[in-house]
Amino acid sequence: MEEHLSPTLTLGPVTFDLTMVLVSIITISVIFLLVFWASRRMELKPKGKQNVLEYVYELTINFTKGNLGDEDAKRYALFFFTVFTFLLVANNLGLMTKLETAEGHNLWTSPTANMAYDFGLAAIATVFCHVEGIRRRGVKQYLKDFVTPLAMTPMNILEEITNLASLALRLYGNIYAGEVLVSLLLQLSQQSAVAYPVAFALNIVWTGFSVFISCLQGYVFVMLVSMYLNKKIHGHGE
Image (cartoon, rainbow, N blue to C red):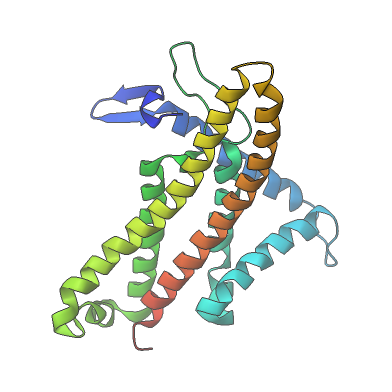
């Protein structure tokens, strides 16, 4: 379960966490295949798998329109749909199974149970918001928010750092904690024949609760990014 026990591959100055690479590819592949399958032979009157796909798409619009408004919620719907579906799969991946080598290398986990990974996701979302803020408002007007009022400039800059850290750590803490407890329950089940049914029942309950928390964290992440994006494209006082 520990992040440092994942197998790695070093190419020059860069070290790749092979477990993170594997589960990232699986997450992306699962989403692509599901969306590809659900979007084949789309009809004007949706039904079945198309209905589910459109429901999730509309759900992301409903999540964000309270912060962005109807027009901007639809404008950025594909971005938030991508983020939300990625987190739905990534957050729950580690609950499916546990794979380790004889040397103790972890071969399967939720990618979002890795702190560096979550900081990467938060950084991508933050950069996207900054880029859109500059594109929509222009460099001069955009930078004006950082120095208005002038005395608050250090705090405005610090806020950018804390927003990114909060976005990453909230996601990491919830997903990592869930997997740690699943791992502990698995160890408990191996202690004795008496402990096994207790650990099995607790694991079922906790897994169900973890799925709920994982989906909730996807929603929270999308909501926070939409709030952040609204602030960047409209400014403090608009």
